[in-house]
Length: 600
Ligand code: ADP
Ligand code: MG
Image 1 (tube, rainbow, N blue to C red):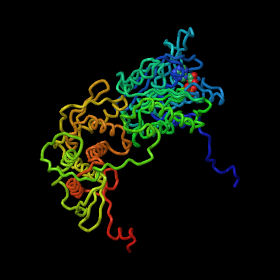
Image 2: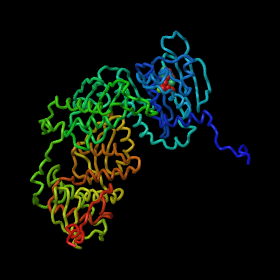
Image 3: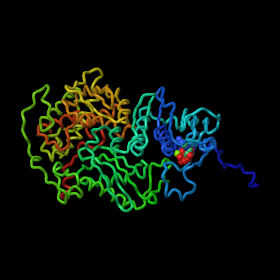
Image 4: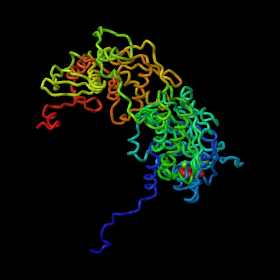
């Protein structure tokens, strides 16, 4: 056959398809639009930027960003939407000294490829009477002309992803999108205090910062004056870089890194390397699973920072990464040492930067079995230490008795001891040795009890003192989404104005937990839960209630209490794992043990 007769299968894509594909990298979701447009406003030298989000029927319908920056001439305004058109660099060598946030010339082209954009702009101090208006939808110019306009730029983005249905389908709930926008705006506000930002949602103000030269003003605006009180300044110069900003006293630590904000050369980035270096600076002052609060700005020779590694520029590549990380670690460690936190934390000066060489000896009380009177039924005094608290927690669980199965797949177990307040040792009726994870077992029991609770049953208890929770705008947005699900499980929470929520009632299974700190942690767990995307709200809330309500590892229980846990575990549907899937019981049969001791 003549090769030319074979039907061709390869062709070059038309420009509009190319743009839509490219847009996918830059414009992932509404918050990416906000990020790109706000960065353009900052690059344009704006002193104030207003962001408006409009939503209807659970979807963000439009986004508008208005700035008082340098504006654009009619010619530039038209060029701005052409892919790879930029005023910020002329060649690749300019990246070594880049001072602007943008440089790829992709954002406007990408956004216009997947939405309908209305641009109104007029250059600053140009003497022009009229500004320029351009409307572009799906990459095609629909209208272009003159219009009366103030100096600066306004961009309205509507019908986002109207021509990319696959992307549209994956948009998350409005509150998730809002939370994303808030995360981005927190970084933007902190990295650009020279500009004032106002964020509105359906015309209601959500967040606002003033122009300021003091980063602490911005931090206080974003996270509240309380946070500022616990911060320690950092200011260190190195030959090739400088570190400035604030870190928290160890007492202000968190379970997540949501409040570790790092700026490199004015660019808000996310860097595991820098986050780890900050944590390393705390040494043993912080538990392994905690993160500090930190607001750090690094000035690094621009030649050492490659900003062109990610389409949304959220990541950067650092040459001499090790030295930079070490500089950050040292800055943090020195700042902490200068603060004399040591007596409060009970740690030696050395230990603040290097882990102690000898392990901490076990406290002798870990091996005693205090005997207590059986607690009276009904309500016991609120206390958070010792066996009374354990008893209180266990008694909550006993509500389940009588509801659950009478047959258990788990053999009867006689408790023969406990180890370290973590493990219960037992002997089964089939003569095996079992080790039970006390916390995991109790978690399983509580979890099934919460699930079993019938609808309409009284399962919420009012707090004597309502607890006030302070939340960032981002957390508020997520929490609002969760309110109905929380109410269904017995948490009565209301928005209380400003940045606060008020907790009026909590589930009965949590017992008399009047401690604001614990309630705060429960809500934080939910707001920052990494499983949010994969597990439904009810399930997540149930797990958190079970986890926080359960007896903590390290709490030494009496033998009687251990026995109660084991007996209740036998009544559960799935006694073998905790709600997170970790095992609750491990068994050692006689043959197993004999083999280990080579008795066979
Ligand atoms: P980049 O920011 O990478 O240059 P963009 O597509 O975001 O690419 O913007 C293209 C160009 O449009 C910018 O280089 C800038 O000259 C101009 N521009 C965009 N937004 C604004 C704005 N808000 N004010 C003034 N000029 C702007
Ligand atoms: Mg840009």
